[in-house]
Image 1 (tube, rainbow, N blue to C red):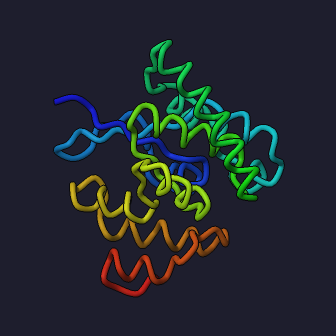
Image 2 (image 1 turned 45 degrees about the vertical axis):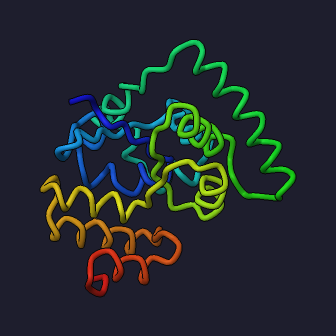
Length: 186
């Protein structure tokens, strides 16, 4: 069965990669879901001192090497992605949205390649909904991993406790956690 590719935005990657390793390029579940990030994640990380301070482990060899595998893209798709990026960038400006260019590129890949995008960014989720780009949140991804036995509930609780510790919880975290996992967060 072919892989079902899923693209993580930067925040979802930063929230999960330290606790679930290797996170990327590992098939999970009976649908052979496989997680990827864009190469621009590294550029975004390198340019942002806050990210470098908060997630100092990101450039350790084991994590850097895990990010090296990319979703294949044809020349035709590359052209379509570029056009979609331009369109979404204009849409961002006209609607005064707080979406970075890396976020826009992630959505463009999701749109053109029909790849589901994992994000907790409310503006990204809204844009994805408007353009019929399939998404899931980081908590929903963890639920998928839990259902297929890739992680257990102890790991879920450990991850969200880490988010609490580094003060980096997704929007509507408590409500979403209870809805998805049927318990109060730790």
